[in-house]
Length: 106
Image (cartoon, rainbow, N blue to C red; front, side, top):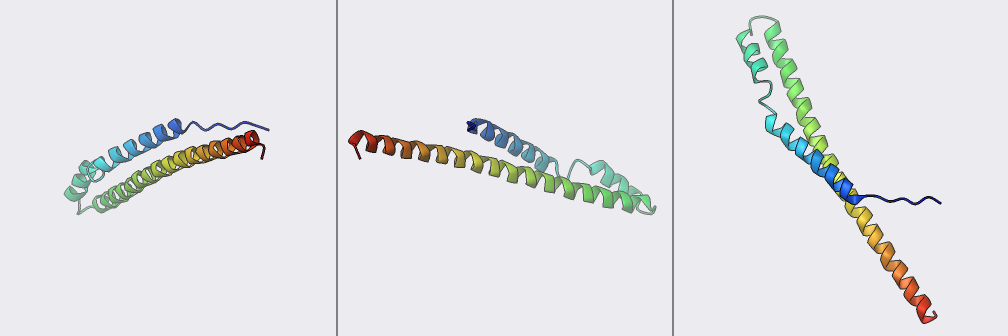
């Protein structure tokens, strides 16, 4: 039988990192392609202007979705950490009850 040990602090650290990255992406969303959008507006009479705008809009939408996914993953990592800790506490409680019963001769 194999022992399995989950380092819940590591899960929480990863969650914090994911959430921090998500916040950084969200802070830049809508602004990191400003130069592309300016160029697209300046060249709207050419086929490249609207194509550049479409590409920039699609990229911003994609990056917003990535930021949201990172935030979701951060929440899931925190939930996993909590679940592991709760399960471990419950197993300790049950083992203590079993030992207590054995000591009483039950």
